[in-house]
Length: 251
Image 1 (cartoon, rainbow, N blue to C red):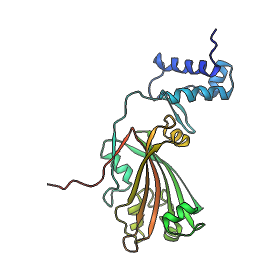
Image 2: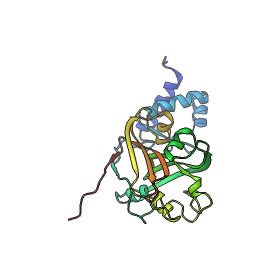
Image 3: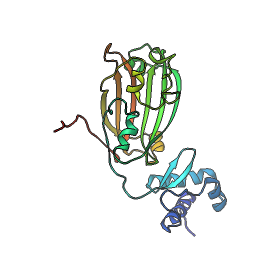
Image 4: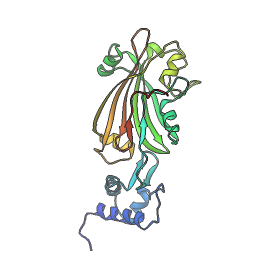
């Protein structure tokens, strides 16, 4: 009889499910309740077991959807550019499509009062109303990018573009949405740094905590007035993305 902790014994069983090829990449893993019944353990034990195999890169956690076998084939490296031409819709979706990848996203928008950090970036007063939208972008169904976006409601409030992902102009990207209310923006200003993923970011991306990510602080500006019209914090998996800036002249 093994002396290893119970959660490690459950983790061993999860590995066995995968290594025996009873489960293939993309297949759903047993639920927490099913593993509780099978091993006679608590919810906490099963969650610790799953944390182990997630950290090992064997399993992907999808919030609200369960646990899935993670492919061991390295995904293709994707190229990110600042934006696409006007009229192409969502920059992320268009960029992925050009690389043969299907881009989709989950989102949630809600109005809130700007905190000091966001107010400074948008050049408004703390407490001014902004529309905050959280995104999880997926490449061929796998999480690959996160974003938190803020827009001053003094600019978008009362218009059909106030909700970035709802209404007749949903999902077309900041530049095209702003053009609909007479605001022309140029190339966004981006500040790129490298760091480790936080635990919440790692969970949303389905990776082990502390993996390298690119963190981008992005802002769009009205070309006429110079005022910021949107700012965002973007997180990209370092193993999945490279950034490319500038454009080669056409011959």
